[in-house]
Every structure is written in C-alpha cells, then in structure tokens.
Image (cartoon, rainbow, N blue to C red; front, side, top):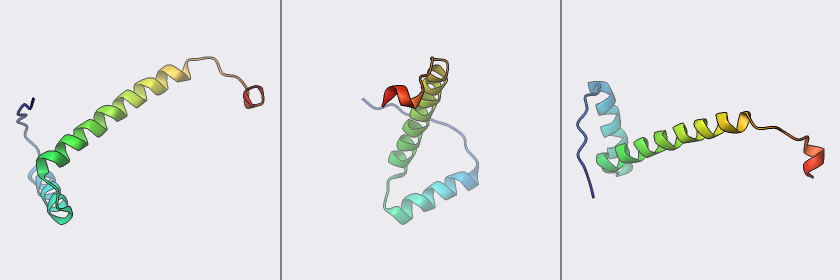
Amino acid sequence: MQAQLATRIESKIKRAVRRACRSRGLKMNRFIEDALLDKLEELEDIKDLKKIQGEPRRPLEEVC
C-alpha cells in the first residue's frame, strides 16, 4: 500500500535532488523514500547504541 506525503522544502534542495536523480537515472519518489528509510534506520541505530553503551563490558581478553 502506498500513501502520499506532502511537504515543503527549500527550492535549492529540490533542485539538488532532481539533478542527483536525473544524473543517476533514478525516480525522485524512490530516491526520497530511500533517504527516509536510511534516516529511520540511522535513528534506530543511535537508539540501539545508547542502549548498548549502558550495558556492562568485558575486556577483549576475556572474550577471545
């Protein structure tokens, strides 16, 4: 299922995205969807990293 997302961005950003897509033969919708997914994954990674940082650690010598 697909949904439409309307947003306002600066004209220079839209032009840069359009140029990047055109030069690589990409569809702008796909480019933007991939960028949003990448950002969501990055945010999840940061959340996981913060959680891991609070866990107890063992010296590498004990692991190997």
